[in-house]
Amino acid sequence: MAFGGFDNHGGSAPMADINTTPLVDVMLVLLVIFILTAPLLTHSIKLDLPAAAAPATDEKPETITVSVDGQNHIFWNNEPVADIDALAARLQGESGKQPQPELHLRADKESRYQTIAEVMSAAQRAGLTKIGFITDPNAQK
Image (cartoon, rainbow, N blue to C red; front, side, top):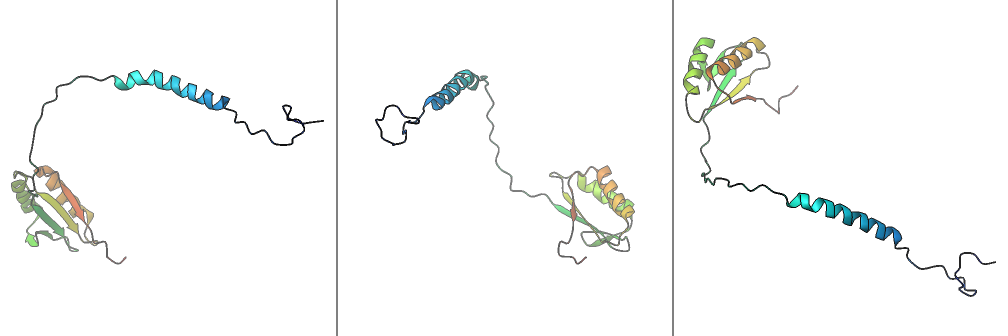
């Protein structure tokens, strides 16, 4: 009794033919998918876009550093400021410059949040939009 042979006349060699039917099925499915999607890829809208050339600006905006120490004293570029109203007046004067300066806010960890919030509120009322917080990444906890 012989198993799985096609008259190989007593030889016990395995069948070495590759079944290509699954390969052909997959290729036909892919062909149908590509036929259906190809027209969608070539559809485009003709637009006449304007051309403009602008040189890159190397000008960096001015940086203003406002610091709040542990006793809630406010400093403008390391110079003491009398109070929050004096700071607001200085911020108002700086907000009209073009390009608008960047405000870097530094605060001691012992300072009150209320003072920091007042500084941020004064900057917002003055119209400054670029506010960054400066921290010390190497500080010990």
